[in-house]
Image (cartoon, rainbow, N blue to C red; front, side, top):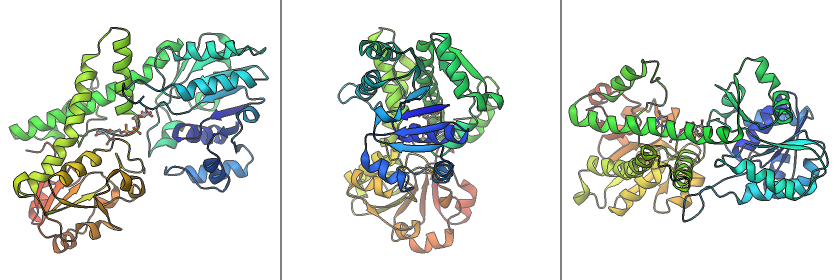
Length: 436
Ligand code: UGA
C-alpha cells in the first residue's frame, strides 16, 4: 500500500519510517527544503535512538522516500496522513490548526484518486469534521474519508512504542475509512496489538484525555513527594505501594521536577480551552497545569536552598546535569531545566551545565548558562550540583572525582537516581525528591 506522510517532524518521520519497515511504500513530505535535503543525505532532523538506521535501511530497500511536493507525494496514496505540528497558539493556548487546515486545503486541491485522509497530529475534538469540510469544499471528484488516528509514542522510545503499541485508536465514520486503516495496520494487527475503532470525535478526545491523565498522575505523585518530605515518608515506597494496585498501575509515578516536553504542557492547555469552549470545566486538569508550572520554579528554589539560601547565593556556582525534558532526546521544549536555570540566574548564581544531546537547543533558551563539554567540566568549582534529567551518563558518576572537583560536595538529585544512604556515606550533603 502506498502511504503519504505530510509533515516529517517527530511523529511523521517515526511513523513513516515504521510504516515503511512494515513493508508499505511511504513518501514523507515536508515543506522545509533543508530538512528534506538532510534526510536525502541520511541526516536526521531529530535525535531519536535507532531512527537513523531504520530510515537508512528502508530508503535502501526503496520503501521510503522524501519530497517537498505534496501534490507529487500524495499521488496514488491510499492513506494520506497529516502529521504536522499543532503548537499552542500564542496568547490563548488553543491548538494552532493553521498547518492542519493548510494541508487539508492542498490535499483537497490536488487529490487525484480515492484516499483516506488520516489526522495523526494531535487535534481538538471536531477537527476531523473541519478537515472533511475543507476537502469537500475544494470539490475533489474522488471518494475520500477523514479518519482520526492519534499517536501515543514517547520521545526517546518512539520506535518501540510505534511498533509495539498498547493500542491503536482509529476514529472513523464509515466502512471505507475503517477498511483502509485495517490494511495500514495489518502488520500490527497480526502481532495482536489491540485496535480500537471509535467515532472520530471520541478518538480525537482520547488523545487529550490520555495525555491529561498521565500529566495528572505525575503531578499527583509530585505533590505526594512534597508531603513525604514534610512528613518523613518516602515517595518511592508510596508510589510502589499504590502502583501495585492494578486499578492504579505502577507507571508514570516517578516523582521529579515536573513534566515538560512538546506534548503534556501543550495538550493540557488545549484541553482546558476545549473545556472552556464547551462550558464543561475540567478542574482537575486546571489544577495540574498550575501545580506543574509552579513546581518548576520551586525546583530552582530547592537548588538555591542547597546553596545555603537565597540571601547568600549571589556569586556562588551551581552545575546542572541534564537539560532536556527527559533523557534520550535533544528536545528542550518546556523542560523544567529552563525555569530552574532562570531562578538560579535571577538570584545571581553562576550556572554551568552539561547535557549529552540537548546543549545546542538549550543554549539560546538559557543565554546566561555556560555549557560544558562533560559533566565533570560543569562540576568544577561548583557549590552545588543538581541532576535535572536522568540520563544514564549520570547514574554512575565517579563520586570521588565529583567531590574532588566540586567546591562543596552538595548534590541535589531531582530524579532520585541515587540512594540517600549511599550518598551520605560517600560524604555528600544530598537532597532528593520526596524522601524525607
Ligand atoms: C508523551 C506521552 O507519554 C506519549 O504517550 C504521547 O504520545 C506523547 O506525549 C505525545 O503526545 O506526543 P513524551 O512527551 O515524549 O510522551 O514523554 P513522556 O515520557 O511521557 O514524559 C513527559 C514528561 O513527564 C517528562 O518531562 C518526564 O520527565 C515526565 N515524567 C514522566 C515524570 O516526571 N514522571 C513520570 O513518572 C513519567
